[in-house]
Image 1 (cartoon, one colour):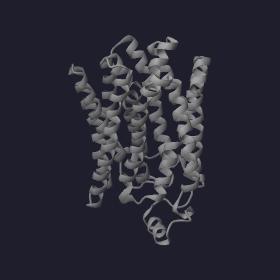
Image 2 (cartoon, helix red, strand yellow):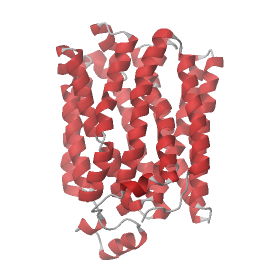
Image 3 (cartoon, helix red, strand yellow):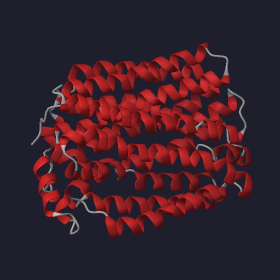
Image 4 (cartoon, helix red, strand yellow):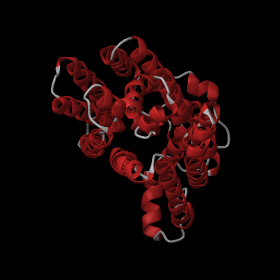
Length: 390
């Protein structure tokens, strides 16, 4: 959508505020299923939940061009429906990883999974301009929407929510995984009062909000920034938007390797999480502050890539922390913190459209930098890498 929105806005005569509303409508649905997806994954298993989510959002993606031609209200509803499907994905993934991956390999495994998301963004941004030029903007949604059916057929046959359910796993492999993983039995009830009474949980929630404000703005508005400010055409905007996501895929795995190496050498999990997330906050903050001093389009693209590259160290910081502090409730906990993160996406994406209509990109980046600094303080004061819920 971040690429297709450019020709769509031209065809339907949308203002920047309307574009911001459309971009944020995805997050309305995404917000609704964060906690519900976490509860569902922790109680019935991540395989079913993730499979449902992919089928749901693939159908919504394919319906997007039809909805856009029917009118703005229909488009907003379909985008919100797409968000409903995607909202269960991260809690489900977190639940599956908590059952399959030992603590000593947690950062690397999470970084590897999330780098798949980054490479998906790379693929979408690289191919969308070509599809638009050859077949029109609706082809983007039909093409990528249909890919979910291919993935789902493989997922049904090969995936399992936990090692206990995998008939092809060797007995010695199953024993090794079950002995080293902290999350074993399905959850039957959620101790909400206990969860919400812990300050590290609130550190996750606040930090997730501060982190996602900047991340979602760059995700949804980056091609527009390249097109409006740096004066790149549609194809150039799409291709250049690839670089930050490639950087994230690389640095997420680098950060995961560094984090797990530090843990294996005796550095406390708490210290590792604080170091990695501090890089994930202060790195993007620094590079965004440099954009106002840069006149060269090439340097601006490099700054964006460095900002997102530093951001990806968060995979070994706050995104790994749910499984540290509450492994049995990691899906629920990610649902809670990502709800705050989605609220940042809703408000940040819509607010960016409003700010651009009345101000400048410098104002947009200043808000993001301020929130990164708030997140740094909260994270270092209140987070922990120790288990606080059994």
